Length: 340
Image 1 (cartoon, rainbow, N blue to C red):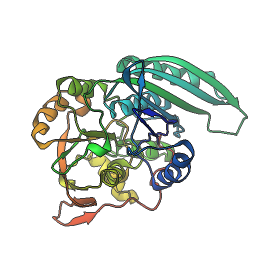
Image 2 (tube, rainbow, N blue to C red; image 1 turned 90 degrees about the vertical axis):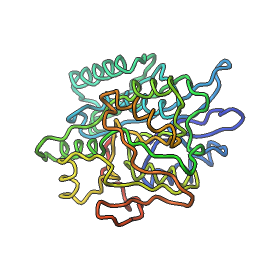
Image 3 (cartoon, rainbow, N blue to C red; image 1 turned 60 degrees about the vertical axis):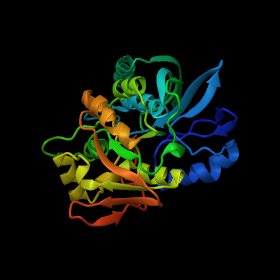
């Protein structure tokens, strides 16, 4: 969950955050927003501000995933890609990141080197620089080896920044890839479970397809990366923020066979399992074909598909493969804690 300090958003102040569970959302709305100030704009993945007359976006996030290394990534790639993606969701081109490390006494230096090397490689791939950082050490057995905080700044490159309040009835919902892989990959590594075929996290930066989408235009009305809370959690937050109804077709949502099997075995709803390289976009219906052409041209978003639309009303509903309709409500607790 992203919770940057408030910064000026034109003539207002706003606090940004990413998708999350009901407890985190309650903390943000009941404690942080009243304390730090909030404007009329709905919370989003990055906060907008002006820097020397130019429009910019800022975001920050902390990563406490356990285990530190998992199939498809580690805490370092997660920290860089997550921050880059949050900036993209606001219509910004990521420019620079900072990195803060909280190290537990006794952490092997080789572990730290692996994480730092992963961050370096991920930043290079995404075309951003890590320009500042900090290190603190805590006592032995006071943490889980290593925590990382990253902040990022980017330049707004779209005419109108992507935001929940721009979602409107008639928009279509585009999903950029298959869901639930990250949460299942982390959980399997944590508990020593194996699936056939193996499940790897989708952890990836979305910079290439999104920057091409922004350059070609028209840009989406809104976008949200589907991290904590998954697709269902993000859609619920956005429907509430925009005051609309979102209707999706579950049969159109790609889920790997092994992931679906793991969710069924463990009692998880894949719609609410975390992702780290997947996003939902809200675009005007007439712009959907062009948007899909761009997304499908990149490996990370090659499975992009229209999965639903926006209508008048409230809440999120899903048509099941059996043809029935269910209302989507988040689980009473976070299904998979410590996944980011």
